[in-house]
Image 1 (cartoon, rainbow, N blue to C red):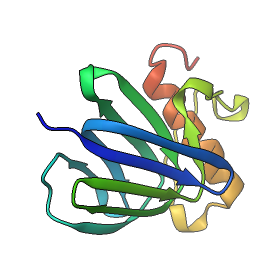
Image 2 (image 1 turned 90 degrees about the horizontal axis):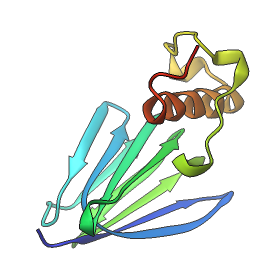
Image 3 (image 1 turned 90 degrees about the vertical axis):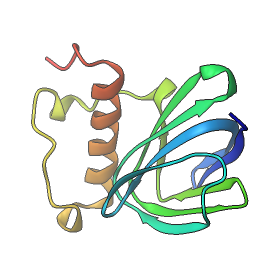
Amino acid sequence: MKPFSVALVAPSQPLAIFRATALTVPGTSGSFGCLPGREPLVATLGLGLVHVTEEGGKEHWFAVTGGFFEMIDDMATILADALIPGATVQHPAHLRGKPLYFRQEYASDVAKVDIARAMLWRRLHPNEDA
C-alpha cells in the first residue's frame, strides 16, 4: 500500500511527521479512518485517540483533546488543542478505576487533558487500571 504523510501539531508539542499506511482520528461525531488516496476532508476533532500505522507496521498512539483535521492530496494534518504521545503518557491517579464517561462540552481543558491521558493509558495498558 502506498504511504501518505501525517503531521501532528499542537501549541505545546513539537511537530511529529510520519509516513503512514493508515490513520484513525477522533472526530466530534465519531472516529474515522484514512487511507492513501482518500478524498479531501476537513473535520473538527473531539477528545479521543489518534492511531498512526507507519510503513513497516509500527504503530503510534496519541491522545488529543480537540482541534482540527485536514487531508488533502495524501497529506493529513492534525492540529490538536493538546497532544499527548503514548510513549510519555502517565495515568492520572484520581481517575484510576473510574469510568471516563462525561459530556465534553462541560469539561474544563484540564479535565479533558486528564481524561485523554487516562483513555490513552487504558488503551496501551489494558490490564493495569486497578
